[in-house]
Image (cartoon, rainbow, N blue to C red):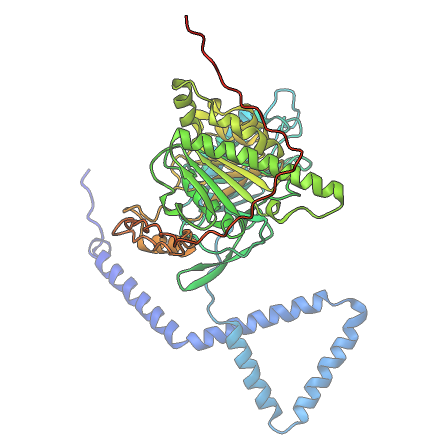
Length: 560
């Protein structure tokens, strides 16, 4: 059968239809532009009418008569006023135009598709840990709804989770550290690596709050801190961990930063400090910061087991009794420190028994700072000499009543080499540098509430004072000013804090060294020649009359 041709209007009318559609769309756009004020006012009148109807519906029935009478009275007053209806119409049009104006579209409620997939994946990963076969109504099940398990969530600009509240069943063993560690590791891995997460366990409410911590400031240079003589600033932490802040200077700006303050003295419960870390983690920086703060009110003895000259800037300063880098000097300084501790204890005990205040020479704090003392352990064993750590037993055990404080810094790999008195009597602990959760727990006694990261800046770690909570810590930048790799700002900040040079016996002051030119050459003064003094005559004493001559004993040799 031959095909019948299509009508003419259908065969070549597609172009005309497209053209007609474009003309209609253009006419509609032009009409919309022309009638836009009228459309806006109409939309506003409709919204005002809806608001009035909603108001009338919400009004109780016993009050509707009074409301109706009030509206009628207002309309009557407006009608009687000159130009009242005109002003009312203008006001109504203005209100309708304002109410019907175009508004920005509201943000969509709930997560988008990518965020939903991330939350669903996190929910599925938690199912093996939070589900049980005996649970009749499981909160976590494969293919279940994540919105019941995650009541609160938030995402950052990159689409990663920044805040999350996780509900878990009551039978989960949240009191066991291993069970908590598994959940924390899983959440940190699924939420995004390279960030520090803080975990807050609410055992009563069966909820876990996960929040991302902001990086601690690393641009804090060494400076004078507003503290009392018995307080030492170890570093700075998160604002949610402590209630105290210190005013600090950042170039020309000032801001308040929460510190980690270590209290020493007679009433301190943590009189000694142990700092551990990897090489280059900032333990020497922490000791320099502590030394500069201790020199404001006390004396310092420094023993450097590394032998790298990290404390050369303190040599010969007021209050620095010794800076030893060799085994012989370290033994002599620590032996003197042990005797000085005993002397202070005896003097203070005698004063207490006599009812007097302790002597002034026992009140001035004495700080013993040791950097890598385990390096001397091998040298002492090779030379068959005493281990310098054994001389710390008296200052560690009895240093608190004698105002003697011991600070030990070493590497994490040498923890087993530290003696028992050092590990038992250093209740204030600091861990710096990259470390696993197990290493942090072995040093601090409890695991941290955050996830340690692999890459951290120098001076970054954790601190715990006694039985208190674990704080994130950032040590203020206190580098060696004689190091060429130090920036000029940090070098000058340390040099400004150094005390002046000790005045020698001849009365001359040793000039401060220039870091660029090295140490100045010391010239010994020529000894002064004493003037001859004429001796006074000594009167001779008369001998008594009854004095007998003393016989002289001589030794005779017998000759054969």
